[in-house]
Image 1 (cartoon, rainbow, N blue to C red):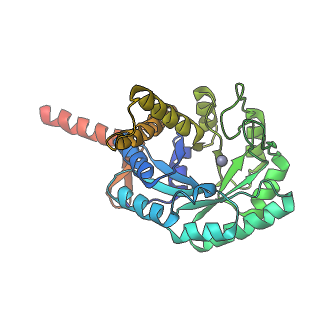
Image 2 (spheres, rainbow, N blue to C red):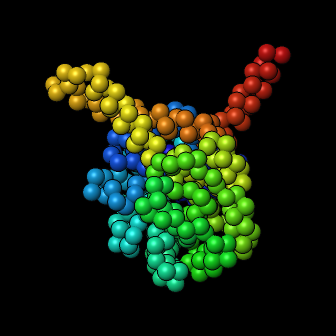
Length: 314
Ligand SMILES: [Zn+2]
């Protein structure tokens, strides 16, 4: 199907209480492989690229590949920019056909964050693209970049003043590998949700999904956070697979080994995606439109087929 609006993907996920993986990619083949894997499991998916990876991934090419592969699949696929820092980057993504973009002004003082985010949201909305913003700061798990928890009252003012569609919160989550066991502050999450009662359409997202326990991720999804960002875990698994391949092939250096090395890294990425689709409960949640305007999901199709077989066999 054609590339799908990020908000439509998140709306269905929030209504039916499953999570959508927002998987960072650092190459075009990873994007294609993640979409195909998700398609084989009938799981809606968001392909994501962080702004800092633009030197490795051409945004225009990523847009073209995502559209082309999505068209051959039957799942909703969205394309998202993560941690954009300036309006020019967001414009490049919009031009490339991204369905949502994030502006990250979380390191700025409150008023400057609001002003930058509002400008970004206005730009996005003029082009029919969703905008994500962040308040409080999701730092690094190692502590090098400090985290600041999202304040519920500031959250209300931030969302009302910026008009964003997706809200990245800092509730004990961080980027990278955690040193200890991360603990999400569910009480704070619910206080933020309550504070945003005047903006019920805003979607929550959790950055730094790597290392959060499956139980906590499921609980957060159940409580209304449908978008979960994953990256570090994929890199770790890809690196492990590559090192494992090299250890088993000490003669490495011949040209025939290079494709195997690439494949090992990709396999590591895909193992994580497959695991997370299971945790998020997104398998078999993709809708297919058999009659224009009427959406039914795979379990409904199964019910219909069963009832027809029943009738025939009687
Ligand atoms: Zn992030």
